[in-house]
Image 1 (cartoon, rainbow, N blue to C red):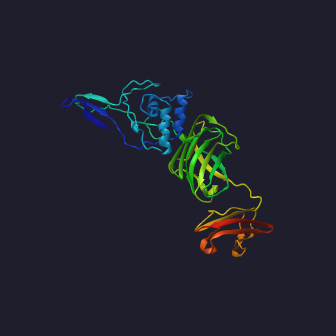
Image 2: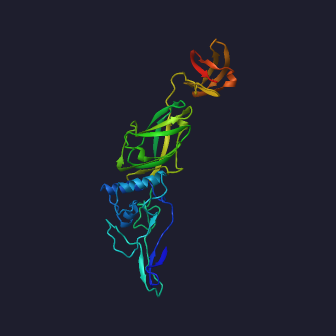
Image 3: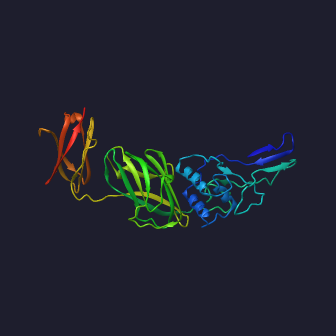
Length: 367
């Protein structure tokens, strides 16, 4: 706190309190849910200290602008509020309107100190934390209740070629009674391009592009949502930097924004990402990647069942350059060839044989 003379050489002092702390401490998408419901008149914040905590922009009003600034904190896009402190300390000895405490007093004037002062009291309000899980001094704080429920989002397995920009629809088998969610997502072998709305009105403001391969997401609804398992919640658009499967490309964690979901009872659950694998019904030989290539390339193929296979490489005259006898696995298989192994340049052909199946494609080695 601070203890300052109001006028130099006078006996009057002003006392105020302060606290240094991280702006995002105790702030989550659950707070956005509660603030949004207050703005829409669905469920009012029930104490002046919660209203002070909700006023992120420090303009004496609770508006969508407060949601915008707090969402940036949650997503990790910013680490401070441009117009407010992390903590505010209104004095206890003041009359506050429970529905509109603005403006409020944060300093106590003391004249002629002659003995110990026992009534210099403040209430700590953590800005953004309207449910009180960071601050223990907000009037009747809401205890952040935990549940064992997990919102399991799902994407379908697929192989993506290097350089391809693909859309990945996200669904959920148990998206019922959900008020919101948040998480961090890491991308391996791919970079984030865009997000498209589906059953959820998600747009760029709900996503923090922390790096090409790291994004955060925060979504808050005013009312609980029930969405069918086959309905697309939203669609991620990504660019593959190399040949990669969706199962190894996407992972949800709490590295920056904690992975959480929220029910209508404001309990906090978990978020997970599952990959649904479509059964392989036939052998498929894919185009080598990259193609053309200088140093090395990979040939991928899909097998409906584990079986023996032969992968051969030929030049334009039909001369066999390389042959590999493979004990292929069920699902995706990959074989890498280097220029040195093939010992040639220009146009080559490669053939996959397994049982009665035969397929041939062309590859190009450049200088």
